[in-house]
Image (cartoon, rainbow over all chains, first blue to last red; front, side, top):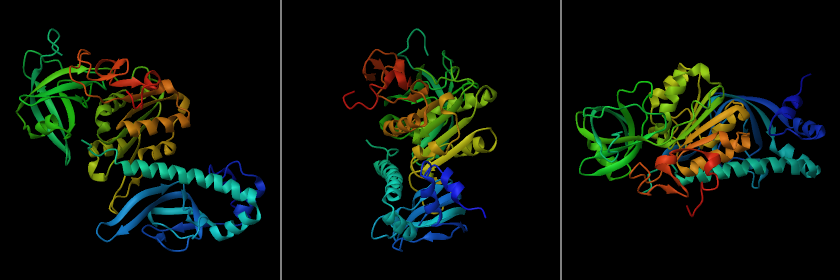
Length: 153
Length: 277
């Protein structure tokens, strides 16, 4: 039976992890597929997963009554969707809606949290990788907030 | 340029006006005086003079291979550009130029080209895109990454579609924010760099946009392995005379009107982004 281990080991996000760490992560992994316009998660719901996007496109968005839907970021092939599973209270901060049919590897957050508690080396390695993603998103958000393309007289 | 009197504008007639966005338009200018020089190199700029109002430096965004007119894309950001927006077809405008340095198209032959533009920054680089497409087989991969504020702020929408569909170019577009009608990418333009497929050690990068955007873009390109001396940027400063006399556009020991607006990043890396300069 083919497992997800080889793919996970080659993915840039997990590259360099010990084989036993990859094996442990694969135990929490499953293949998923989402249709266009399907919500993967909603703001406020319990954050139980994160996703490695294989192909497709997902929009991170929020709804404001006075403005409607506001798209703040799109996530595509090879990218990571979701880090709220890692930080208490484990609730999503935004909605995730599928723009193009998306295939992904879902990693169960509860399962991974338990494994990270039992294996701090794995926990540290994952935390380093997610910290990098969170830092990139923070930098991108700051640039978006600067409104660099606006006219500033 | 009027060779004897570089400070004297030549009269041009507005031949066509195309609205790009709510605050940006593209104008085509045809000469009708003694001076009918309209040849230029991709990346250069002209001083456009609205009589009775003043002058502003505007990049030339037309096709250098078809040089019987000047094409400029102008965004309303001040009194002169607002006056340009009020002009109609048939009106006269003064032109001095072309001035400044150009994109390194000759030196980049055989290499991959990554063009990264933000906002109105696509205008100064469009003439280079035309030139590269004209000589497509002389370059490796061609990648255009374009970031705008919102879908409504994107310029050259038809050309972007055209380049994506017909030519051998990888075109990726992103906006900083959008509503649910937008099916494309949302995020900063730097987020597109790692999604593009190019050979960093054999790549020339050409960047044009707000300086903050260019700083973060350069950082990302260097992280990818693009060499310092293969990164080129187009700077914007307060150009006045265009011939390196007045000093308004001084940038450390350089003058943007003459030594720029296109600079090799390796030559200005110590100056770029410095608060004191």
